[in-house]
Image (tube, rainbow, N blue to C red; front, top):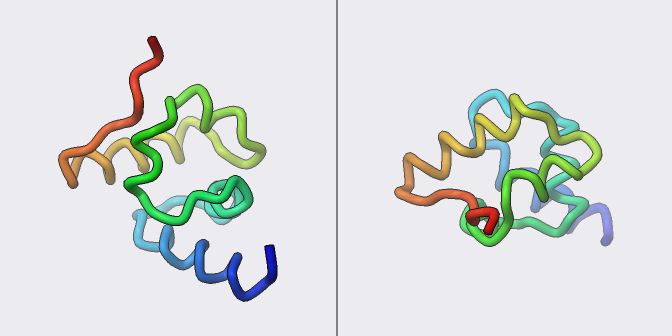
Length: 75
């Protein structure tokens, strides 16, 4: 992924209140570009990303809920 593309992806997650840079980099590195994409993965899957922690998961969960969305269920 070129630097310009990676910066664009990171910027789309900047709107998540308080999410740390390591978590934003983890999302960008995994190819997540939009919040809506995170409805297709479970919290456990995101926690496996280097740089993603419980605090970031909570912030993402809240951002999803504000849009009436949620993580995929772990069935």
